[in-house]
Amino acid sequence: DQQVKQNSPSLSVQEGRISILNCDYTNSMFDYFLWYKKYPAEGPTFLISISSIKDKNEDGRFTVFLNKSAKHLSLHIVPSQPGDSAVYFCAACHSGNTPLVFGKGTRLSVIA
Amino acid sequence: DAGVIQSPRHEVTEMGQEVTLRCKPISGHNSLFWYRQTMMRGLELLIYFNNNVPIDDSGMPEDRFSAKMPNASFSTLKIQPSEPRDSAVYFCASSQGNPHQPQHFGDGTRLSIL
Image (cartoon, rainbow over all chains, first blue to last red; front, side, top):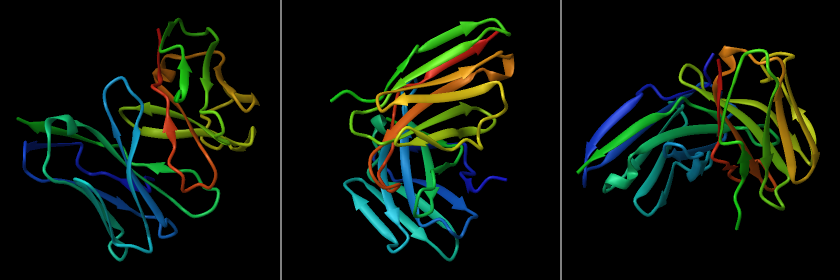
């Protein structure tokens, strides 16, 4: 049973527009959430995170929103650039020594 | 700074053979993780170590899989005997300190079992 779900396997967005990637989770014990970005033939790289005590965290063009009541988080990229084309993984964990649980990823294509 | 180093980058072998994947974590990191990525199941955690001690190996598929971390700078994931369904990309990651510290991933080993 998947605890972290990314229901959209792929997303295409025009350059300059907003990209919104979504993630849902089922485990109410999760209190820390991360987004990773992965290019082909490379490992995932950390992008941005958010703690459950916040509902928004922003870093440059990237903003993560957390809706705890809906068990939903989203990653917004504004403006989208062709270099943002990659697979984005959502991950979650519970405080303490618990490992990350990853979603299956969403492939973002930013079209010039 | 050197990142997480995995070897080999690619491995092609026949079923039944032993396969050993290697990982060198980032110096100073005290947690090490082995993941497997497949189309069907995404990124799955196989096992993780903290201070060289295996903490959770519940993700290891079966007894054919084993992992060791003899010291802070080296870990291996071994499959013996290998089967075609083991074909996947295997990632190693390391992190420092508390679990909220982001994990740093290697570039993976693409394993093909014929």
